[in-house]
Image (tube, rainbow, N blue to C red; front, top):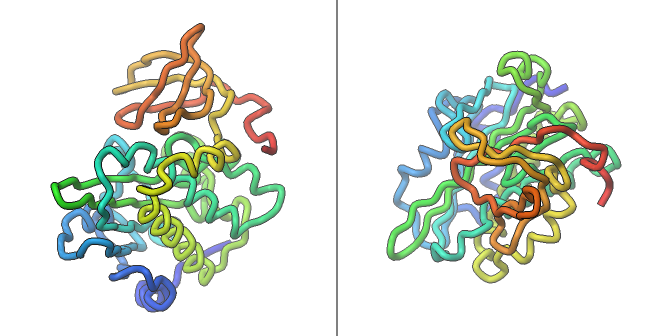
Length: 280
């Protein structure tokens, strides 16, 4: 079981040597929100990238302003910022693509049949055995010259049962399915950050088409009955049917198929069927 993380100084030093594509790397003991910190930093040039991580985030958040519950040493939280020449019209599906990159990165560190239970819940929550393992928040700042993309992740490392009881819903943790020593945490950060860097700076050329097939092998919601809500009000129910070419979730509602886009929309599984974790 992972009982502690390397010190902020150790993580910063190791990553600075490993993540050579990144212009600036820093890990701190505590901050409010790594996403917010990177949002306020405007001194990088086009094509540059940065990483900021923290042992503890006091105001960490997820999509739609939800609170990210974390405790120092029990979760892994960091953000990457990228100065890109992407156009606003090229952002469709980017959040999903970054989720695919994170999910595949963890899977590669833990090969074996058990890892098939690690899935991606549209658009970018990582799920293991029906418990939420990690949440990803993607934010953008758009101006006439370039688009800044900030992507942050919070991963539960240990004590999933305690966290489940605290917040009242099922969660999972990395030590549910893999042995991760403190030094292995740095490898995990490296793999995820590298995948995000490669995705961001190749996305304009490859767009979502590259990730559609990869997502099919990871799709947690595929062929599951789901309820789509907004502001805690039910919009409709139906059967999840994968994604379209724009990265929107397709939900069959009776004779109609609706496309659900990322925003203040929430999608939850109404009931779990045996097909959820069928091998691709």
